[in-house]
Length: 136
Image 1 (cartoon, rainbow, N blue to C red):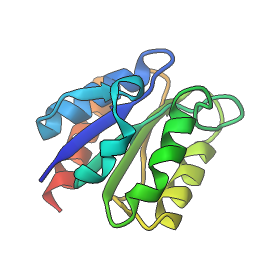
Image 2 (image 1 turned 180 degrees about the vertical axis):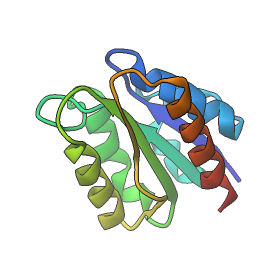
Image 3 (image 1 turned 45 degrees about the horizontal axis):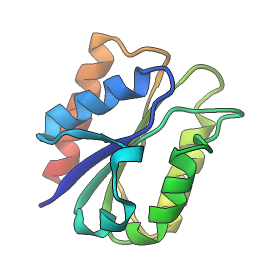
Image 4 (image 1 turned 90 degrees about the vertical axis):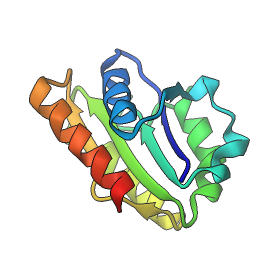
């Protein structure tokens, strides 16, 4: 069972989430810019992290193009989503979930989102989410 946690961050909040998720499942977190997208099909469990940007959208400079590239390879893959936001109501996560499901991926639960910087109780919740993800 190959697992990977891939993320992009702008303020550092999503990096904190990625570190928590990665530690919980026993892997290293990987920045989008350091991941070879052509290898995504080698993974059974894929956790993706991105904050809300712009008008509640995925980052369009690094993460968005990466996500578009891997999207066709997510079919029948176990995928978990997480991220942080600073405004709005989490619409970016709902849209992201729909895209993952439309690609034929096996979306795990609802994506985990946190407003601004995560506190210890949220990080514990995320850790439990990550452990459930790889135990399914």
